[in-house]
Length: 316
Image (cartoon, rainbow, N blue to C red):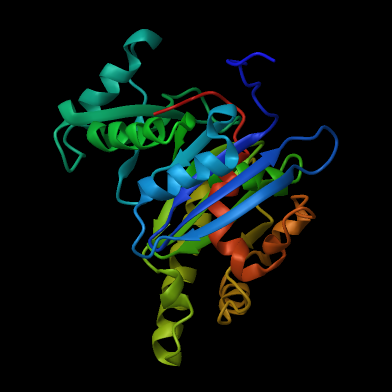
């Protein structure tokens, strides 16, 4: 028996997301010609426990060094900015983007880590300059997150953002040749994404939290629903003008829990598109994770599952 046997990497991807009151961890295996399989799903309340302590416990239980893992920045830890692509060589793109966004940031650009995402052009439009999304985070935030995982001996592969995690789930729902609008809510607000062909075209934050759209006071809840419907209709109209070649037949509402507070009905009444509610069992094999069969749990796992579905090797 070898005392220092090298551990083999285990099939699949893991993702850990930090929420306001809990840490969510999942493991997903990509299986050809069938749904991705969720083999593990854990939700640990933070309570008085530190994130570092929870990561350390997860590393021991999951043999963290054997797995490549993703994590997510939360809203407020980064900025997501649409910009016109500068006409520079690819090797100079990030430095040029840094100069373009320096006045848009709420911190000094010298303290920023910046990445870029391409926005696909309208295929029938005349040639024009490319648009990009610039993703900017404080370098200190990135470094602290990396150190957390290093200390826990968890191999961190990607630091992702919710927009891209939601894109990954949307890709499982898309119909060929058509776009898809996907709307989710958490404790920090709403997120609308519009995707097609696995590409992210639009990402928009909506100032309505999960608690607000489910508020027990009928008047306050109705105001939140109307605000959400108005913001979504504006986004759908804008997308239709920018990308007339892409049909957008429906809006999918990510899991809200056992009760969506009437949001789906409100959106269906006020939007010029079909509105459907998502059960993650439609696109993922969750047979090994009974906890995920509950819609109230699916809401908490939503972003972590999206991060675990990522296949490309691109980091902030």
